Image 1: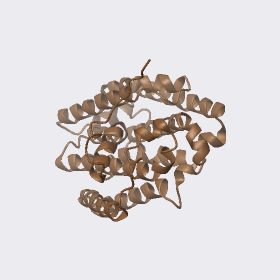
Image 2: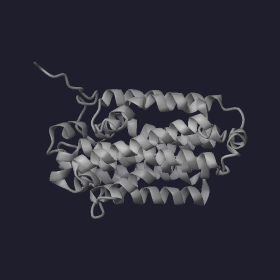
Image 3: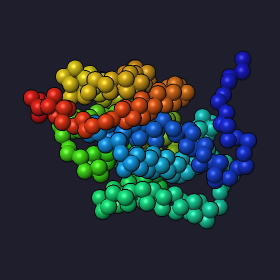
Length: 309
């Protein structure tokens, strides 16, 4: 019985860098989309649905797309050893001339830098740190993704937590207890996602390098995934119940429920289509919330949680 396989709509185009970048954006839409959602939540929480807010969340989306493209580019030799990962990585295939890659990377980085430059010295500092982390995580000689502990820590701090923090700090909003609480959920969600991915890729990672899960072992890796995910669920539900997390954000939690259930079961792999659909719904809902913003919401949130902080 034949197995149906998803085929990229870019598969018939010339095998050049632009095609691969476009395919990377499509394959990784759930990843850069989550970064935009995290930033969007911060903007909504403080009523910053302004032109600057739009520029920031768009710049973050482009920056995270570029970051994941860099990761795929340097992962291509390893992913080529596995049929599934090779199919998912658009950079697996005929090599692209290095000078073309450099020119394209410089142009994209310049565009991202211009977006962050709008926010002054703080924006440029945020850009510089993000660029350093992108290459330290994915590119040799550092390749933090193959340094157990550093891999999970980098994801925890920068996948969802960093864009949320930027949505507060770069917009000159007042950091509140609710921001700390939601940033904590972002950190746990990022850790959970990374451990789940490493469990999915454990066979390839065991052949090509070391990760947190390969060092810990698959059984203990799954136990760690379940523990982090259950803790995340408790934190989110508790936050919604007591009002630290505004209840209007509950649909975002529901959108990622399939991923939560899979991870509680200790399963690293899940449907790529379902994951992309849930992320798309969450992103559209975050956009809807931003469109509804008419006044700063930080004051009522602070009032609601005043007794806790």
